[in-house]
Length: 79
Image (cartoon, rainbow, N blue to C red; front, side, top):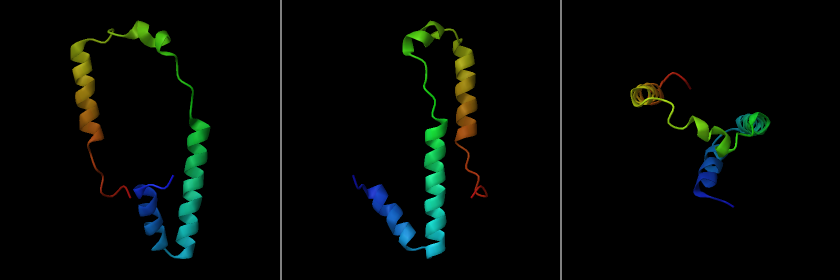
């Protein structure tokens, strides 16, 4: 199925020289291969249900704040 996202990626690739198109394709192949290779099967819900409610509300709030503080950062030099 072709989506607007696919069309957008194709337009970006069309603007690149052939060598960079090939590099992008290689990166995508490597990424997809790695994603498939590292995908792990999780546990059934009933196996982890026993842990529900075991983390205190203050601890959950602290975890939420730490995640929000760390995940909402943009490093402009990363790319």
